[in-house]
Image 1 (tube, rainbow over the protein chains, first blue to last red):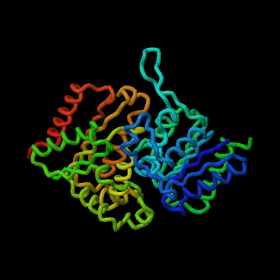
Image 2: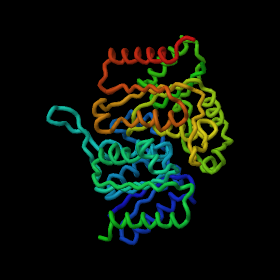
Image 3: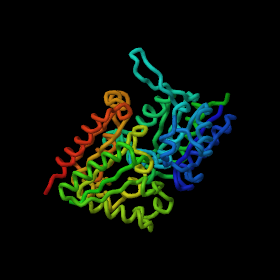
Image 4: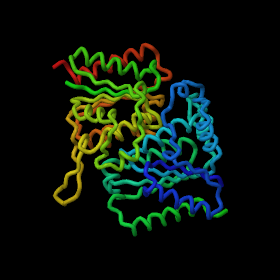
Amino acid sequence: MKILVVLAHPNKDSFNHAIAQSAISALKKNSHEIIFHDLYQEKFDPIMPLEEITAQKYATKDKIIIKHREELKNAEGIIIIHPNWWAQPPAILRGWVDRVFVPDVAYKFGVNDKGEGVPIGLLKAKTALVFNTSNTPQEREVAYFGDPLENLWKTCIFDFCGIKTFFRKMFNVIIISKPEERRKWLEEVEKTVNNFFPLA
Amino acid sequence: MKILVVLAHPNKDSFNHAIAQSAISALKKNSHEIIFHDLYQEKFDPIMPLEEITAQKYATKDKIIIKHREELKNAEGIIIIHPNWWAQPPAILRGWVDRVFVPDVAYKFGVNDKGEGVPIGLLKAKTALVFNTSNTPQEREVAYFGDPLENLWKTCIFDFCGIKTFFRKMFNVIIISKPEERRKWLEEVEKTVNNFFPLA
């Protein structure tokens, strides 16, 4: 399977990078084709420009964006890795969604029985995994903030685009985590990837 | 009062810009001091760089970011205006929060009775208003997506930073709105601003 892996963290020594490496290593062992983007490393431009937002279906001449859209369209599985910053992804990933998840790539609008416009998910991928890191304890993340990243990726983005199999795991509290704990977390990443994207 | 107004939309002819103009006009009539940022116009860089995230308390040498932090610290009221893109703000505004809402500006960590770290909001502003535009009908936004922008701005950002008086209004459905409807919406913006930031 063609698996798209997208990472957004400025620090190459971050635990996010370690997660990406574990995920990629598991995918490789299972003989999948990997398309990997380290958005910071690639200096991805997340700012939706005026000419794109005003074009029919966000058409663009930007070759990098065209390539990202093709890759998303053709991906058979998706893995997203990012830290929890203000209950959201970093801006560089925020804008990757804006510019890449466009009509005729990720969704289109149809009409229901009542004549109302309804979104139809178009992604070929059936499964999306999201791995996050956070410095907020999980109980507080859920009780106080409502764990917004779950709803964001599961419902607002992937379900909307037709992906029904969704799994997300947030590793916390990163800042006080011990090497042994991190090692176990990386094993968990590998197991999860093996589970959802096994050897064919 | 010093009111910070921040706008994020690529199109100068957008309804978001009209909202900003109405808000600013009301603030002027009420003799407030206005600090206005049109993030797209100013080509704000929303990408948190490695050197900032690894510095103690996100210290930076970037003069633009230092100025933004000072303005946020000193603001006595805040107004945010942006479209609903994938249930979130555009990347340019997403990153403005990452780079500007930093420790000792927007919050600090204290210790509670149990010896646990607890965030303490530091913003001087007592009131924040958020105006959004959307192409999703409000009932669907609430029922299907859970209106994530409400929780994001109210709880995850402003409450966390100490702002307890919060008001948000999303205008929808923009794409099918008539001039008369838009005129009424702009009047509503003015009334809201007058209500929360009256003539002293």
